[in-house]
Every structure is written in C-alpha cells, then in structure tokens.
Length: 270
Image 1 (tube, rainbow, N blue to C red):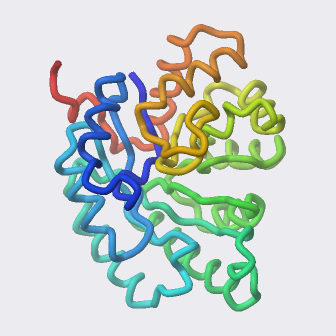
Image 2 (tube, rainbow, N blue to C red):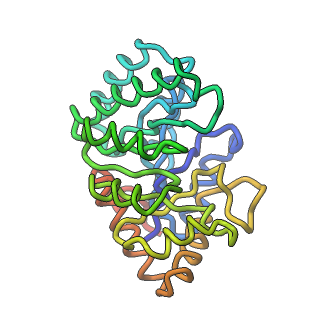
C-alpha cells in the first residue's frame, strides 16, 4: 500500500485531468491521496475531488502563503466547515497550515504576526476537534514547533521536512511524522538524504506535494502522485532495506498520523 500524504490535486497545473491523475496513481498502487486545502475558496473543491476520486481524502486549512488576503471571517468560516466535515469519512485533518519565512513579503514584521495568528487559531480548531494537522514549515521549523507545543493538536505531519536532526526530534516528540518526497531524490540534497537515511523509519511518511517538488527524473516537469512508488524506491536504497518494508512502514505511519483515514474503505476493488 502506498499513501501520498500531501498532494494538491486541485492545482491549476492539473487542469481537467485531476481525476485521471488520481486514477493513474491508483493503477500504480497509490491507495490514498491526501488533498489539503490552501484557502477558503478551495474548501469545496478539495472536498468534491475527494468525493469523486476513489483513492482520495481531504484536509481543510489556510496556507501561510494565502494568509495576506485572508480575514478573520475566513477563520470563522473554517471552523464552521470543519464542524460540518466531521461527519464526512473522507475528511482527515486540518491543513495545509503553518508558517513560511522564506518568501520575503511574508517575512515582514506585520505579515509574520498575521501568519502566527492564523497558525495559532487553526491549531485551536485542530485541538477543539481532536484533529491532526498538515504543517508547512519552510524556514520556520522552530517557530511552528513552538506554537504546536503551546496549542497541541492530535499529532500531524511536518510537510516537506528539511530541518536539522534536533528539529526533527522535536516534531517526533510531539507526535508528528515527517514528510519526504521528491527533494530526497536529488543527490545534491545531502541534508534531506541524511535525514531520510538516519531518522527512525517509524517517523517517515511519503508525499509528493504535486504538482510541485518533482523528483529528479521529472524535474522541472509537473509532479504527480503516481511517482510515490519510485520515490519510495529511493528511500529504500538510501536505507538499504527492501521496498516492501518501506511500503508497509510508511503506510502504517500515515494511518497513525491521520487516524480518520481508512484507505481500504475508499479504494474500489480491482
């Protein structure tokens, strides 16, 4: 079983092909694709995709890149939507949320504070509904971890992790898994490959972040969830283990971090 724990299947790069892309992934053994929302405007879109694709589920959240145009009303709307979604078996998490201190505009003092406010308010929603979170942690691992410790959700995933071993351990200690994907396939990505090799396998989940973060053999083209098995093969090679062990461990880790997700309940028999 393969699980893509982070895929923006609704992105404009997929156009009208989103369902075909999901089916192609299923044909490659990808039994579940987690589609995180990024703003209020695409909440209904990710839900509709998850309702339509037999191997998809979804999360609701406001991404830090979309915080500049977001309002307090969006947070109120999000809480309402989460409350309604709790009856939906395909709804699995709060996400994508977090902090981004890489983009210069988002690093300006006023925008940093707004990002932090939106992260904390969304962590409160996760806490109140006992939900895990999908966290964006670009150049912000320590800061995200600080707020997660103060407002603990029911676990989660540090998406596209690229921090230190100490930061990795911090997330593991609060019950998070760490997402690895296409970046790990580049031989020059020495730190990410060291993390993927030396961290406990029990702490790792697979992701694509499609259509972004394409693996080496696709770059600079469009990433897609059907790349998960080949990305996993790189992880198996780095760790010197059988790919079957990677499949079973990463799927179990994904289900542990997103306990509402039940892949076998959604995938149609072949």
